[in-house]
Image 1 (cartoon, rainbow, N blue to C red):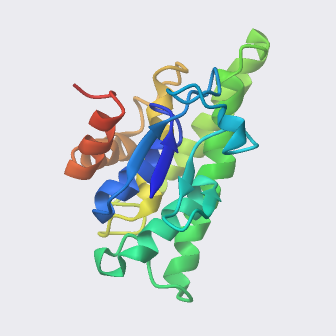
Image 2: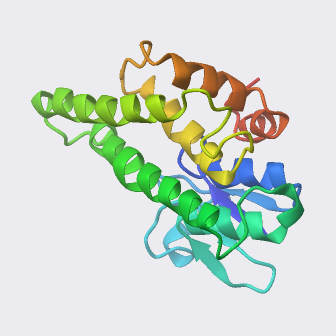
Length: 202
């Protein structure tokens, strides 16, 4: 398998999932700015949408979209319990979290990374994100992870997205449950390995 990624982008989530799963893969750096690979290949010829992540399977099939990719990875190693079994209510709970993180948080950050976003609009964006994260903080009360005591691929995604609070100047210092959770997830060997692979940790 090949994972097309860009350091610190949302592709860190499947990167974490691959390390948690212990699956063999080749990381391929795809710049989100130049849309070129290191060998000069135009990334648009691989993913017409131009963004990461993209997972290329050994048979040449390509999967786009982080939530689909991480569920695929989890399903390759069911014994690792990175996702509940298909068809169970718990699986739909996982999909509920992946959808929430993707639409309410991930996309919520987009205007803060866009140079064309007017400065006066950014405080409103931060306020809305903070409200969503306050709710997440409440959901983490008394829990190790989003789904309880078991780490799942949703945790890798939430960790990835909440990493963006620093560069976007979103103050989450008042969210104690989220802070403890981020520390717990960040300490996992697979998370550290994925971050080191992307040059985010020394």
